[in-house]
Length: 314
Image (cartoon, rainbow, N blue to C red; front, side):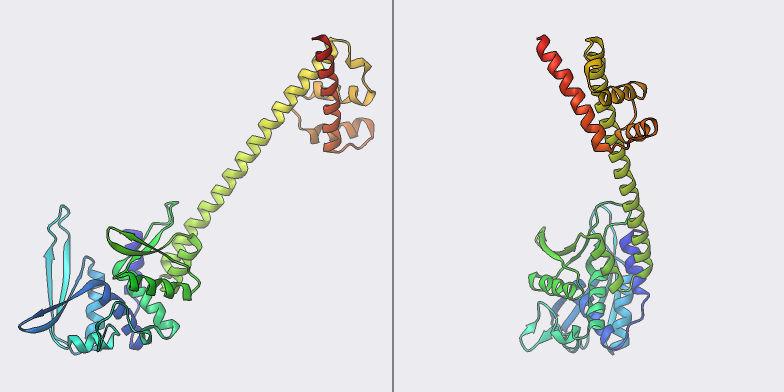
């Protein structure tokens, strides 16, 4: 089972009644159904590729309305030949859609009436239904964090984005293959979304994986920084040794200040040490404390002396 399916399964196990159940059903009906007209009257055709979604919709309809429903299963005519689970509502359709805020005197609405999501609990329930019907989320094991809901229309996408923003989750809208997609990519905001729809088990798995990955990445970055610093230190030490050996072979080292000669001897003795380690050893031997920057300054003077000698030779 995919991570998105786990989230939906957890959401389907929540029992919602009253206005919260109506809000969740409103979202699911808008995203999974179509309205048909025939000589027999108006009918609502609901389809889902997930049995959990179909069962949740059916239970919510049965709990709230005394409508006649017909269940069916068919196989999609594609390569995968997935099963599609359907519910045909053949009575009280207009009354149901009106109660769900999806139908008014103007006809079918692109988005539900505000009364459906008036309270925060109802808004959470609506987002839960929307995600169950048309949402997906990448598994936490992937570094590409992404959660999305395919909206019913442009107006509906804007409605969903307003709802997520109400809970501090800024979502973006894009068009993909002619459909409006509302999406969130920030890991922290995806975690917040899982929290507000009540998918707490999925949230714990998501956060555990994310924290582990972030920790490992931080350790890796620190290791890379340490390696880079070590390589930089070794390169600097090699250049210093080259300067010291040149001054020594040309007889110029003995003419330098004694402090510079002492530092040069330390570098010859400890060619791989850092400036900090050389400074500590210098303090032990001479009783004079020299900072890391002070040690660096002395090597700069040694380098200048070596460069001057090389230039004169040329």
